[in-house]
Length: 97
Image (cartoon, rainbow, N blue to C red; front, side, top):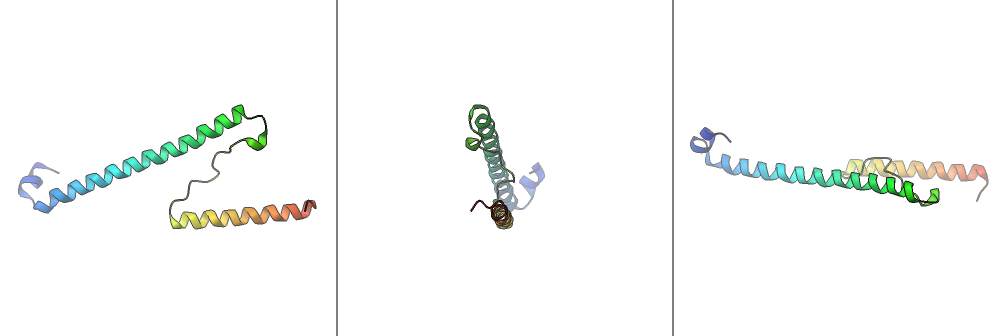
């Protein structure tokens, strides 16, 4: 907010600028938290691969971004359905019922 806007502009501008700054800070905080979550997953996967004896016990890093919106959740659900279908089809072909 400029000097002229503060002293000579509409009084509502000060309130709106304050609210916008609060919103920007919340967004930066959320982005930092999300970045920390991805870093945590990466470190966990790396340590798991270094210290795990069996490949079955290893934690894998995420194949896709974490879904937060409804659209992303629907896409993730569809990927899981397709992965399950492929798994069942491969189990049927191998004869391992």
